[in-house]
Image (cartoon, rainbow, N blue to C red; front, side, top):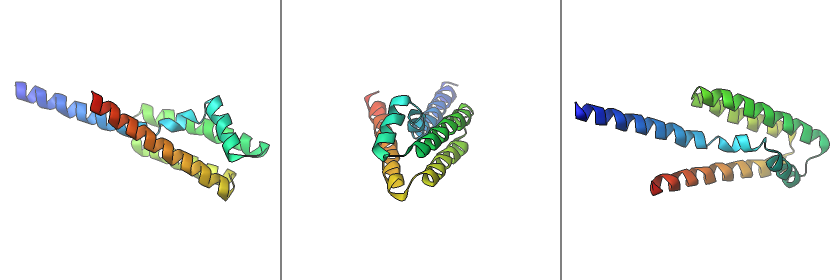
Length: 123
């Protein structure tokens, strides 16, 4: 009986840890809608006023869709939200601006995953 209970606890911890690790990948999408982060991104990309308004809308919709997907723990939907964000920012930005944006997103995802690994190793 104890072995079964321990096995269930380990299985639950593994699945929760797995979801948390995948969840970290999308955390940076929330940050894009933060005023300071958004303004920094606008300066980095050197967007015009029209692009700024469109990006603000894309980031707002991204955050809303992501909250819905992650509240259901639906990683397929979360991945679609990431694709939505990239597709729409690519449409709004020039090729040069999008390359910078894509680099920031990739570095952010990588850094979040490294932090998650470091936190797990400390525990």
